[in-house]
Image 1 (cartoon, one colour):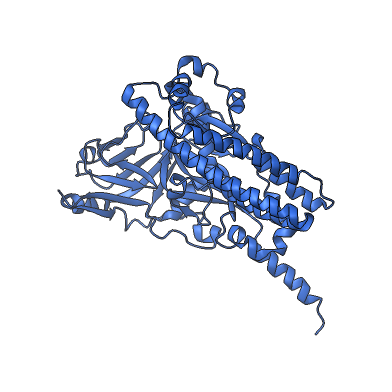
Image 2: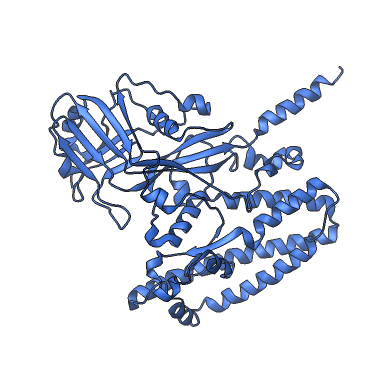
Length: 471
């Protein structure tokens, strides 16, 4: 098997992360105070299409609901591991409402609430694990017997005999009963407006209106009579839980249509970079930290035998044209349940140690997403002072051995194409080498908002206190 080596193909071209960062930031434009641009190290494929719109809405929701790492360039591991903003926010709100309850409720009520919360959390985790096991079994069974994975009728019949169904049903009933008891214990008006605001925010994030069900599979994999029922009302009326056919997500929406994402030319651009190009924005300035370690804008993995040929070819590069058919920032709306004003609540400020994991320098809620940045049809043209010698069409074809990551977009790599990942074009045109991502849609990153800085608030408050102290 031939040895594969990674090479920075333009190490001497003087291009850095800042150049691509500047291009994207310019196209997005209009960042507000405390808003920042966060790139993804890998431009992740974004599987949406009007052909399966409800599955696409669920995909959008999942990529909206992502916990932001406090860094300008994030690994896609966060996305793939489903590290959700809503999970962190719910835990934060649980801590905050607990402080309110300690101040407002008697000891006996607090003990009952604590036992109920512990039981609810344990049972909820158990239900999630059982549903996942049943879902995996259903997919295997449906594929083995050539059944339609999205058939509610066939699934309903099959699940009656599955060993997890009885336990899931019992746990769901217990969860409903414990939830009702919890509501009865906490359903009261508090005299303090600050405390009532926390109770209202907690009710919003835990209430059924904060969640929506979406198809687990593309719409076309469900029977036609089932798809005919698909609508927001239909999914909202389904039971408030995951199942082997539908996923239950914390609701995050956008007014941007699937057509805007998949067919429009919103944000179409083309930009040229040379050795003399200067980035008009820098990660260091915007984030007060470089955050770019290990993120090379031009990385290629190829056989050692081709290594020096490719390096020599690219050493003659004079300019690079970067463009896309569309690049846009999709607004994210989570206002049904997400209340950022809770991060500035007086109880949060008075209990710094408790909320440091959420809002401290590396806090899980220090940044939250406001827009998802997506590009369609990314393309690059490398212009050389001579003809390109190496056979890039062969190396970066579906059967080729080479792969590259250029501005986060992967090219080549053995042809891992699917219904939504279309084949790319690699073409030599005399002195030009063209890399075209076709009509693929990719996530480039997020626009994020930084919460009121814990440390700034703490310093300002203490400076004021010290100024009033007489020694």
